[in-house]
Amino acid sequence: MLSLQYSQFGYKLTIIDNQVVLILVFPYADAILSGPNNIVLVHTGCQGAWSWYKIVELMTSSGHNVTAIDLGASGNNPKQALEIPRFFDYLSPLMEFMASLPADKKVVLVGHSLGGLAISKAVETFPEKISSAVFVTALMPGPTLNESISCSAVLPELDNRVTYDNGPTSPPTTLILGWKLLASNLYQLSPIKDWTMTTKLVKSLYLYHAEDVSKDIVLSRKRYGSVRRQFQRWMIENNPPNEVEEISGSDYMMSKPQQLFTTLMRIANK
Image (cartoon, rainbow, N blue to C red; front, side):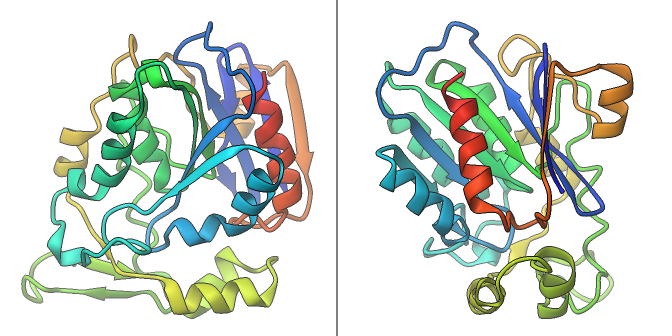
């Protein structure tokens, strides 16, 4: 199920079982977009800009300006995972893109899964250039929430592969998602061609130390914003939303692109 909820704090998106929830953050309440929206899409770990191809097609055919970013050692980025041992190097393609934008240009940032950390860094650094930030099944840290708490459970899953480039007694250095995990946990409701494409395009992800991530993802209430960040069920019980929308039959990899596109455009135009 794909689920969207809105409250006075924004939209919240996380995943419980096969359920997806969306979060929208407004760094500046008076941000106004005129004409076509400017959308920036940021992928999850081991993947690349290519993972957004359906959303990119829908957005561009509707007249919106869309940029899908390849983070470090991802997609068409020329570096390899072991060449970017600092988390900031992984984020640098997005940060360089945001820095290159004119001061008066605002974008809607959309981050998927691990991409939530990347757009969180961008929101903190460039709040004046961002009209909204959307977290799609994403990690969403905050000023008082440890951004690394959810990153370790995926390592031993099924046929995931890790490397120990610093020796067998040291922590693992890279991860690449296995075909079985992709099929059973991420693409179980997606067309087989999407799974096949992904098995050919996934790349290794450097496994950054929590201290390195914490050093780079430092968020303030003033700039990043004071958005509640808890699981959906807790939010419904303790912070009743103004609006709840659901798209049934969606998996972790956004197997309902038309519905997700419609939802993102509604968010962007609020």
